[in-house]
Length: 446
Image (cartoon, rainbow, N blue to C red):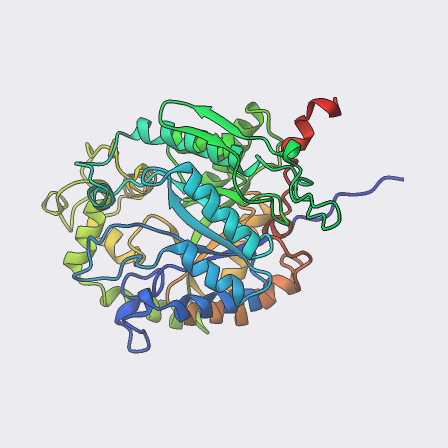
């Protein structure tokens, strides 16, 4: 008797980006100017997402204070925020960004293993290399390290962190009161690493969590970023403007992962999606237009120029982006590539790019009714262009509440999205296996 495979299920994460994906969200009368540094703001977003049965709550990060004169920045350290959220939620996954350029492997391994234990197995680490000059200056560097070097360091860094997480077998903790044995040290596997960037010795001081170890997430879209994801990532936050582009990205990434000896189902792909809802399409477009009008043109131009690593005066508002504009060699290649490709493909002037990209980045935006948003999500999901989405509501927390109230029920009625959690760990939410750990390689097990 044959058993058919269970149906694919859509996954949804919320990207809790400050006061919302729209860079002008902070200027709305309902917005709290201090929300970017208010723990309760993030707790509320996480609780709304959990009520909507989202897979995970995600926090981006940067240590740069550039731009504070006109806009908020990522002020609070993400894992501290997520530790507080862990105590005030029960199921939702907790994913934080931490840079491999400005940390050490043992600190990151310990920090995320702690969050994983504290949350009952709900943690995930978003591996980034940090491409902004402000972060480099904050850590005493004259500039951003060269792109290839950043990714070589990230690869080695991630290998070491995985080794530390795997330095305990699942059964290493004994806690035997009668015999007095606490840990079976024969089941500890100290890391003895000497590489180009790091020398690390010894096991981690923490046992494994309910999900074995935190989920590894990655967000780079450059060649080096994709190679890093193929080797290590279990979920990828991608940037795609079209269904065909996203489907090709997912296919290529999975093929690269298979070439690394990983299974075809080893990675979940989550394109970023900015969402602007309204009861009617006209209302949604009016709301979107109001957010656009609240973005000062000089700020929007400076933001775009920063993405492209050029002086703002090089960009002429009513002209196309310069045809000879290169992708920045050492900056955020993913966003720059997406912006340049779309501008050249669709003949958009700089002013048009600024007006339609209220989020200020290269992520796709959808403006419409709950039904239109649900239709769009279903179309991408069924076409294999996405396993789910890294949702970026235009305004937080109101935009997320609208999505949970109005779009999630539509997705549930269509049989695409869960009506309740079926597990407790992030791996269970994402349908990822419990990692085997070092026990599968013990000599006495053959």
